[in-house]
Amino acid sequence: MNIVEAAFLGAVEGLTEFLPVSSTGHLTILERMLGYSTDDPDITAFTAIIQVGAVLATVLYLRKDIARLVSALFRGIFRPAARREPDYKLAWAVVLGSLPIGVVGLVFKDQIETTLRSLYVVGTALILWSSVMWFADRRATQDRGEAEVTWKDTLIIGIVQCMALIPGVSRSGATTSAGLLRGLDRVTVTRLSFLLSIPALLGAGALQTATEYDAISDGVGWTATITATVVSFVVGYAAVAWLLKFIARHTYSIFIWYRVALGVLILFLVAGDFLPST
Image (cartoon, rainbow, N blue to C red):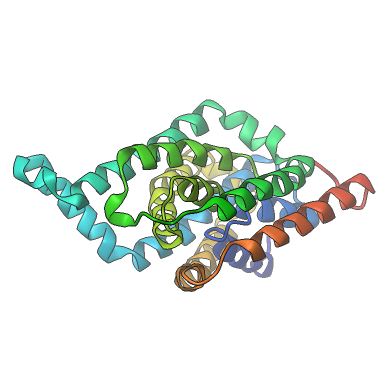
């Protein structure tokens, strides 16, 4: 992979990771259009690893929140009186909500990296999950904020986040839909989505780096992978900052219509043999 393609894919990853439009779906589509086989181990690993850049951007942007929660967690572990603090409860809620996708991802790793990367799956998931997002957006009461988040909220959101293992669903789209249906406001559920993404995506990137190091070296190349990851970090930071401001004043309608249009286009291109499905 040349540097220009790597930078382009990194920019797309950084932009789409936190928008409810499916970053993996977009990367699968673009990698296929560029002539890469998305079933190859090096391309699968590349797609997972460059997400680390966007996650690190989230860590940097939310560093004060993360430091606050980690501090509260350790205070509560060593000081029973501190366990009544809202931040201690929120920290454990985030930890609990991060577990389901890790378990499901490991159990269904082979299917996720092969069968589910079909563009038929991507296009269909983009369209079908849009209806879930539309329903959640319309039914949202938004009468609960961050201080009222419970472990039950994050566990349900974390379970629904597992749907994002299907390219086209969108991790952000899954978590925000679940959060809105739990009555959380858009800013709170978007921030929770960011926090829940950190363990899942860092874990996936680390696993692929460890298991597919040689495949990357012999295929895509580490220069291209590192370039894409750095670009993903830069663009991801800007995307996080923009989304939090945007979502405070708007619904998800623009993303829903975009998803439907893209899904229909992809299914048309695949059905007409303009683009290979696998």
